[in-house]
Image (cartoon, helix red, strand yellow):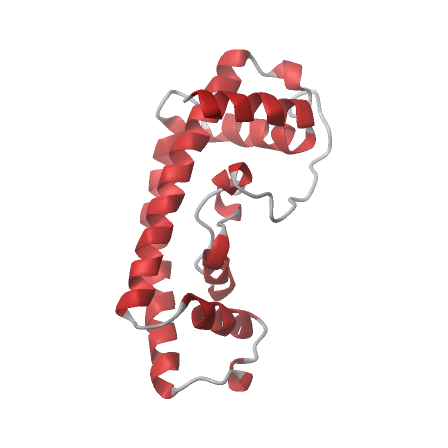
Length: 172
Protein backbone atom coordinates (compact mmCIF):
# COMPACT_ATOMS: atom_id res chain seq x y z
CA UNK A 1 0.00 0.00 0.00
CA UNK A 2 3.03 2.33 0.11
CA UNK A 3 2.48 3.65 -3.39
CA UNK A 4 -1.22 4.14 -2.78
CA UNK A 5 -0.42 6.34 0.18
CA UNK A 6 1.65 8.77 -1.90
CA UNK A 7 -0.50 11.45 -3.44
CA UNK A 8 -3.43 13.69 -2.93
CA UNK A 9 -4.09 16.64 -5.15
CA UNK A 10 -4.70 20.20 -4.11
CA UNK A 11 -4.74 21.45 -0.57
CA UNK A 12 -4.83 17.99 0.91
CA UNK A 13 -1.09 17.73 0.32
CA UNK A 14 -0.83 19.92 3.39
CA UNK A 15 -2.28 17.09 5.43
CA UNK A 16 0.72 14.99 4.51
CA UNK A 17 2.89 17.61 6.04
CA UNK A 18 0.97 17.44 9.27
CA UNK A 19 1.38 13.69 9.31
CA UNK A 20 -1.90 12.35 8.09
CA UNK A 21 -0.34 10.52 5.21
CA UNK A 22 -1.88 10.59 1.79
CA UNK A 23 -5.12 9.52 0.43
CA UNK A 24 -4.48 8.07 -2.96
CA UNK A 25 -2.26 7.52 -5.86
CA UNK A 26 -5.09 8.15 -8.28
CA UNK A 27 -4.08 11.76 -8.62
CA UNK A 28 -1.90 10.56 -11.51
CA UNK A 29 -5.02 10.66 -13.63
CA UNK A 30 -5.48 14.34 -12.91
CA UNK A 31 -1.95 15.63 -12.28
CA UNK A 32 1.42 14.00 -11.98
CA UNK A 33 2.70 16.27 -9.21
CA UNK A 34 5.42 14.33 -7.45
CA UNK A 35 7.87 11.79 -8.73
CA UNK A 36 8.45 8.49 -7.02
CA UNK A 37 11.88 7.04 -6.55
CA UNK A 38 12.52 4.92 -9.60
CA UNK A 39 12.65 1.25 -8.75
CA UNK A 40 15.28 -0.84 -10.47
CA UNK A 41 14.00 -2.14 -13.77
CA UNK A 42 13.11 -5.78 -13.70
CA UNK A 43 11.18 -7.97 -16.08
CA UNK A 44 8.51 -8.09 -13.44
CA UNK A 45 7.70 -4.41 -13.23
CA UNK A 46 8.71 -2.51 -16.36
CA UNK A 47 7.68 -3.81 -19.73
CA UNK A 48 4.13 -3.01 -20.70
CA UNK A 49 3.94 -6.41 -22.33
CA UNK A 50 4.25 -8.13 -18.96
CA UNK A 51 0.71 -7.01 -18.17
CA UNK A 52 -2.30 -8.34 -20.01
CA UNK A 53 -5.05 -6.15 -21.37
CA UNK A 54 -7.24 -7.56 -18.59
CA UNK A 55 -4.65 -6.44 -16.01
CA UNK A 56 -4.60 -2.94 -17.47
CA UNK A 57 -8.41 -2.83 -17.56
CA UNK A 58 -8.53 -3.82 -13.87
CA UNK A 59 -5.90 -1.16 -13.15
CA UNK A 60 -7.89 1.50 -15.02
CA UNK A 61 -11.12 0.49 -13.29
CA UNK A 62 -9.38 0.56 -9.91
CA UNK A 63 -8.08 4.05 -10.64
CA UNK A 64 -11.53 5.27 -11.57
CA UNK A 65 -12.76 3.99 -8.20
CA UNK A 66 -9.74 5.52 -6.43
CA UNK A 67 -10.57 8.91 -7.91
CA UNK A 68 -14.04 8.69 -6.37
CA UNK A 69 -12.56 7.76 -2.98
CA UNK A 70 -10.12 10.67 -3.29
CA UNK A 71 -12.89 13.12 -4.16
CA UNK A 72 -14.98 11.92 -1.23
CA UNK A 73 -11.99 12.36 1.07
CA UNK A 74 -11.31 15.84 -0.21
CA UNK A 75 -14.97 16.74 0.24
CA UNK A 76 -14.84 15.53 3.84
CA UNK A 77 -11.66 17.50 4.49
CA UNK A 78 -13.16 20.65 3.02
CA UNK A 79 -16.18 20.14 5.27
CA UNK A 80 -13.88 19.89 8.29
CA UNK A 81 -12.18 23.15 7.35
CA UNK A 82 -15.56 24.82 6.83
CA UNK A 83 -16.78 23.59 10.22
CA UNK A 84 -13.59 24.88 11.84
CA UNK A 85 -13.90 28.16 9.91
CA UNK A 86 -10.38 27.81 8.51
CA UNK A 87 -9.58 28.58 4.88
CA UNK A 88 -7.78 26.08 2.70
CA UNK A 89 -5.04 28.65 2.16
CA UNK A 90 -4.54 29.25 5.89
CA UNK A 91 -4.57 25.53 6.64
CA UNK A 92 -1.99 24.91 3.89
CA UNK A 93 0.21 27.76 5.10
CA UNK A 94 0.08 26.46 8.66
CA UNK A 95 0.70 22.86 7.60
CA UNK A 96 3.77 23.91 5.63
CA UNK A 97 5.06 25.89 8.59
CA UNK A 98 4.39 22.90 10.85
CA UNK A 99 6.41 20.64 8.57
CA UNK A 100 9.28 23.12 8.50
CA UNK A 101 9.06 23.57 12.27
CA UNK A 102 8.33 27.27 11.83
CA UNK A 103 4.91 27.53 13.45
CA UNK A 104 6.16 30.44 15.54
CA UNK A 105 6.59 32.43 12.29
CA UNK A 106 2.97 31.96 11.18
CA UNK A 107 0.77 34.99 11.51
CA UNK A 108 -2.42 33.51 12.91
CA UNK A 109 -4.84 34.18 15.69
CA UNK A 110 -5.10 31.82 18.66
CA UNK A 111 -8.44 30.73 17.20
CA UNK A 112 -6.78 29.86 13.89
CA UNK A 113 -4.09 27.84 15.66
CA UNK A 114 -6.77 25.96 17.59
CA UNK A 115 -8.81 25.39 14.42
CA UNK A 116 -5.70 24.16 12.62
CA UNK A 117 -4.93 21.66 15.37
CA UNK A 118 -8.51 20.38 15.49
CA UNK A 119 -8.73 20.14 11.69
CA UNK A 120 -5.43 18.32 11.33
CA UNK A 121 -6.36 15.87 14.07
CA UNK A 122 -9.73 15.13 12.51
CA UNK A 123 -8.11 14.57 9.11
CA UNK A 124 -5.53 12.26 10.60
CA UNK A 125 -8.33 10.28 12.24
CA UNK A 126 -9.95 9.84 8.80
CA UNK A 127 -6.88 8.18 7.33
CA UNK A 128 -7.40 4.53 8.42
CA UNK A 129 -10.92 4.46 6.98
CA UNK A 130 -9.76 6.10 3.76
CA UNK A 131 -6.91 3.62 3.42
CA UNK A 132 -9.41 0.76 3.81
CA UNK A 133 -11.62 2.35 1.16
CA UNK A 134 -8.64 2.65 -1.17
CA UNK A 135 -7.72 -0.98 -0.72
CA UNK A 136 -11.33 -2.04 -1.33
CA UNK A 137 -11.36 0.02 -4.52
CA UNK A 138 -8.29 -1.80 -5.78
CA UNK A 139 -9.27 -5.36 -4.87
CA UNK A 140 -12.93 -5.06 -5.90
CA UNK A 141 -12.40 -6.79 -9.26
CA UNK A 142 -9.80 -9.26 -8.01
CA UNK A 143 -6.63 -7.23 -8.43
CA UNK A 144 -4.14 -7.39 -5.58
CA UNK A 145 -2.58 -4.29 -4.08
CA UNK A 146 0.84 -5.68 -5.02
CA UNK A 147 -0.14 -6.09 -8.68
CA UNK A 148 -1.63 -2.60 -8.67
CA UNK A 149 1.66 -1.21 -7.36
CA UNK A 150 3.66 -3.16 -9.98
CA UNK A 151 1.50 -1.79 -12.76
CA UNK A 152 1.78 1.72 -11.28
CA UNK A 153 5.58 1.52 -11.44
CA UNK A 154 5.44 0.47 -15.09
CA UNK A 155 2.75 3.07 -15.79
CA UNK A 156 4.94 5.89 -14.50
CA UNK A 157 7.83 4.78 -16.70
CA UNK A 158 6.01 4.02 -19.95
CA UNK A 159 4.23 6.77 -21.93
CA UNK A 160 2.60 4.21 -24.21
CA UNK A 161 1.15 2.42 -21.22
CA UNK A 162 -0.05 5.76 -19.80
CA UNK A 163 -1.94 6.48 -23.01
CA UNK A 164 -3.47 3.00 -23.08
CA UNK A 165 -4.59 3.17 -19.44
CA UNK A 166 -5.96 6.70 -19.88
CA UNK A 167 -8.02 5.46 -22.82
CA UNK A 168 -9.33 2.55 -20.74
CA UNK A 169 -10.21 4.92 -17.90
CA UNK A 170 -12.18 7.13 -20.26
CA UNK A 171 -14.16 4.13 -21.55
CA UNK A 172 -15.64 3.56 -18.12
